[in-house]
Image (cartoon, rainbow, N blue to C red; front, side, top):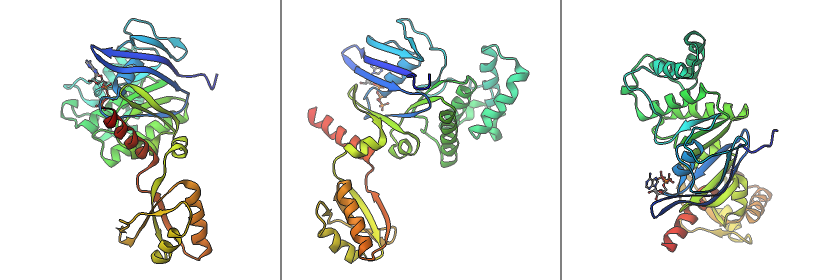
Amino acid sequence: MGTQRVVRARGVTKCFGDVVALDGVDLDLLPGRIHGLVGPNGAGKTTLLGLLLGLAVADSGDLEILGRPVGRALAAPGGVAGFVDGPGLYPSLTARQNLAALAALRGQNARTARPRIDGALAEVGLTDVADDKARGFSLGMRQRLGLAAALLTDPRLLVLDEPANGLDPAGKKHVHGVLTRLAAEGTTVVLSSHRMDDLEALCSEVTILATGRVRFSGPLDKLAGESRELEYRLLSSAPEAARRLAAGTAGIRVVEESAAWRGAEALVVSAQLPALDELVAALVRADIAVRELAPVVSPLEAAFLALTEQQEADA
Ligand SMILES: Nc1ncnc2c1ncn2[C@@H]1O[C@H](COP(=O)(O)OP(=O)(O)OP(=O)(O)O)[C@@H](O)[C@H]1O
């Protein structure tokens, strides 16, 4: 069924000695979504991803993956691929040989596997180094080779822990392209990252974890709606007139440290969305062109920072 959950977690708890890494986590992942996992260091992201990969078992709670309850024994659930703490590679084999070895382990015929291996290497942008040994690969290249290996298994759930680590802009473009294609074809992707801009570019929904608890889980636009007043940077054709208009618009606070931004005079205002809409309409009525309007800090980053501050205050 199209809307059947790929992952359903209820009250999942995992401790390491006295440390509660996951504390009653509920999570629902639907097919074909790219779901971002975000949270401060030690929030429990890797632990949660490890449970999805079958690298550890929960102490309590229910976890269902692809419609099957996860048992108490360590086992990689069928249809799931990915890695935490970097992919496992054979350093003395080339990129292509690494993928061929994995295909052979799964009983695939070398001749039929070859075109798929070449396709996967091309998709992650490693064709040029296909015959170089993995030993000499950078972190970003290893991440991409790990992703290519996961692609060969046709996963229905792909689990990646900080896959953007070490990626240069070209590598990131390849990885984003692969993940977007997979999701369009129905694969669910769940990935953790400390890069809010990456998550916002890729994910339709996010879960924010802090100290092992889910603080938010849902669509990114819901997060924007729920967030507090945000600061927005505005570039216009008449900065002074725009500032006067903003100061006179209800619900808008002009932030004093407004400054130059990319060579133009920027106005920074703090507002909720309805007041901001009002301001834009007033600017247009006054024949002032809005050239750029964006949050200084994105809704995801604002929510993340608010949580982190809360966590520090609690501590
Ligand atoms: N194998 C382990 N043994 C003991 N403690 C662990 C183990 N794995 C994780 N922890 C602890 O569990 C908590 C959650 O760790 P986890 O690695 O899941 O967080 P994270 O959100 O991935 O953090 P980061 O952003 O730093 O990677 C931390 O306090 C960590 O020290």
